[in-house]
Image 1: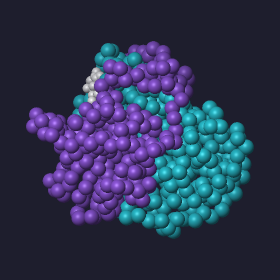
Image 2 (image 1 turned 90 degrees about the vertical axis):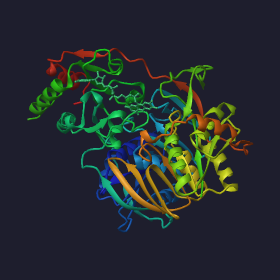
Image 3 (image 1 turned 45 degrees about the vertical axis):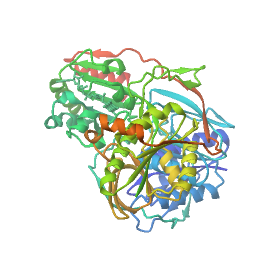
Image 4 (image 1 turned 60 degrees about the vertical axis):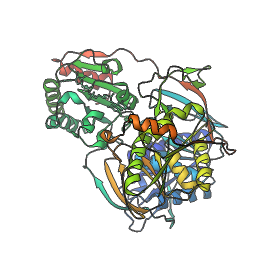
Length: 317
Length: 248
Ligand SMILES: Cc1cc2nc3c(=O)[nH]c(=O)nc-3n(C[C@H](O)[C@H](O)[C@H](O)COP(=O)(O)OP(=O)(O)OC[C@H]3O[C@@H](n4cnc5c(N)ncnc54)[C@H](O)[C@@H]3O)c2cc1C
């Protein structure tokens, strides 16, 4: 039997989130004496999977279909789960992973568990820990179905290499269709995204206006970080909505989250709480963020941030 | 055109999250409930369709009688009628199963769910409902334009957006961007009065079983105090991040 994982990729390269679900599935497979079966689309470096303990890869060529087609992807993966008689299927918590998970589960009459943060605590029946109330709490959830689809929270397991040999076989691309078709994809930038980033630098209303965002961007640049913002900042149009993080925005689960001029309202904190290390730079020592942060500087962002950026730059060379 | 907006009753975003009965259930005492914010963006978009597409907007929730105040609020915002399926659901799978049965006997052109609810964050009702009904589903929907049966849509993706086309019928997962925060409709006195006259039908659930159950809740571990670094000691901060936190 097998654990099936969806190896998300971009332009042929497996994304970090894809390797993380492979690592996670490997750990389950080791505990349960199973095989890890990967499903990847248009992968250019499948040999990379040798290092992550994937036993078999169904490599699907989408024949020039360059977009993420939810119907065809979902159906292709569902067919493999059925063929492999898998009881577990793991997807990441990226936008595409979360999109796919419930659709896949409904197709194969599986249970679906999102926001999974650790390995199952038991297998018969399956129980896993998940975050809920937008990271204000956790719960242990039990699956009552024979098959379960899990969506793993990013950075909750990490990458764990495990050398092995991946058998690559050709998978078939389903021809299922609905009326829904992607026409174009607009990437706002080539920068690392909030979902993939190890480090996120976030700005709040304390930055006083969009013209000061170079402070955030310069710091993010030296750190190779993604940029984010608080809700009012995106509501006022200082930054695009896609940067809004928090309870009603995107969740952040980076290794390092640096909040600059963000007060730390409960709705903001909820969304970023699962970041491992939180740093706050705020002029108000009473700002609630100081209660949630690991490290903090009480100071003026306009003075502190350029210095921090310069020092980090100097350190790099 | 018939539009169904699926509404979830969730704790207000400022709520303190506590559990009772040996951490097996959520403590609702003292908690204010609101329309799930993602659903509210969807509802606003639906109400706009009343004028342009002569849409009839139905809101539905799967829940017990305690959900009725938010359904009344949806009616005050502008929905034409409300339906409550009288069941306290165990998980999103069960909600989707109940809604599926409802939609199999009541046809809708457009079904709107929220991207996810802010309590259990399942993010699954829309995708499951659509798949059960054999309709396409668009998650994280930030644009919906309708021309006859042709739709122009956008989905927020990691680091950008995707444009799509589709035909009705469809299920979408709404979020901010589908309408803006400033567009959200605050019910006025007239809306509230009218809402009292509108239909709120309670229907019996079908027999369903949840796919998952929560065994126990946990609160995050208490956090230690923040380590403050002097604003002139930037090197000190970098040192801590590098050597102690090991994140650089
Ligand atoms: C239903 C609902 C959902 C919400 N969802 C979200 C969400 O998902 N995400 C979110 O972020 N918010 C959300 N909010 C809004 C939230 O309540 C706060 O209003 C918001 O997070 C505050 O944003 P801010 O920290 O940027 O601004 P403010 O609260 O105005 O804070 C600005 C901070 O900058 C500091 N500052 C000012 N000048 C300087 C300076 N020169 N140097 C350093 N610091 C300075 C100030 O001390 C202050 O702490 C939600 C609210 C509601 C009601």
